[in-house]
Length: 125
Image 1 (spheres, rainbow, N blue to C red):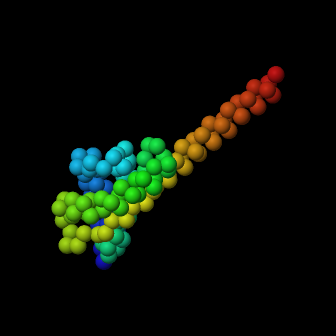
Image 2 (cartoon, rainbow, N blue to C red):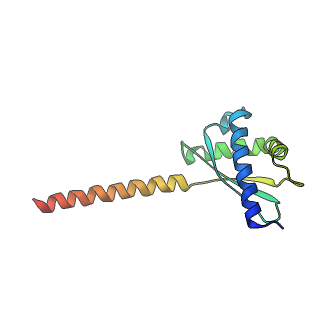
């Protein structure tokens, strides 16, 4: 079992190295234009849950997931060479909807502000 601090550091290192691998070593077009948002490591270092998003949004999530599943062995091997651990965790990939949610919240707030501004202007007449 590993401490939470160490698991966090390992997760951050995997996130950085994975982003570098995706930029410089991956040829799969399904994995282009994505962002690794977070990597969570379990206490036993058995699994690395990798969260990703894309500029295009969730429309590409199925395509990207297929790309990750196809490249999982390659990515794990590359990461194991960069991050020295006795046993490298298995990689699990998950779509991260937080950017889409944040964008939706921003749109709703902007809409509410516009409505409030119109209401205030109409009351002033």
